[in-house]
Amino acid sequence: MHPMHDEPINAAQRRRTLRRNRLCLAAALLAMPFVRSAGADDFAFGRRIFQDKAQCVFCHGWAGDGAGAPQSSGGAANLRETKLNREQLIEVISCGRPAQAMPRFDDQAYAEKRCYGGVTEAALDQDLPPLPPGSLLQRREIEALVDFLQAKIINRGPITREECLEAFGVRAARSCAQYPEHP
Image (cartoon, rainbow, N blue to C red; front, side, top):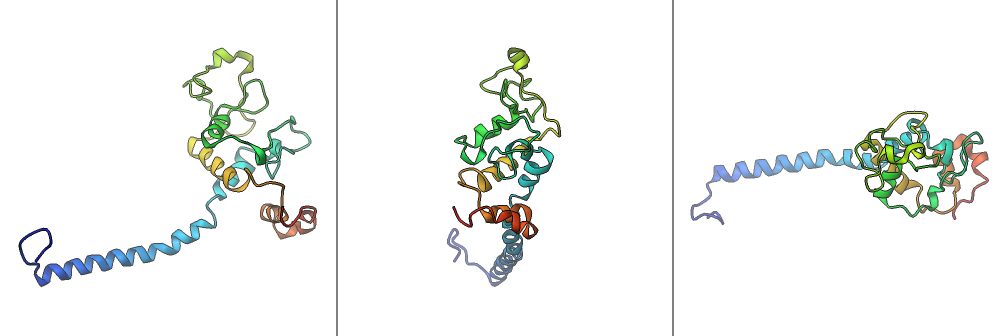
């Protein structure tokens, strides 16, 4: 008898159900290697945005410690020590920091009143954060960047040799030797 009905399940129905269950199991097993392999590269997109597209390393440094390039404006936040949560990071990256060097990566954020409780471009006047020297970012890119920062930079403590090698590869082993193996 079928548990939900008062009619018996015939053999043909049972075979169809078993076949459907086997197909679902086979599909799940085939998908597993793809799920596992994605884990190793989960943050590569965010890392590329940090390093290349948004050029965050110019001001914040390759390790996010605020030690950017000598030609940078200086005074960049040490992202390794930030207390900002995910939504706050998204807002700062999207909106920049008024009256500071941190650019806004979303050129419509102030026009659409999504910054700092609805502040507008007109209200900020000359304190409006500049647009970046490179590319603007889409929302999904900003989120990927924040995911990368939260996984690989924020609250990581002092820079380690492993982080240096991850960022620059084994060719930089001599340069990375200046960092401790573990904090």
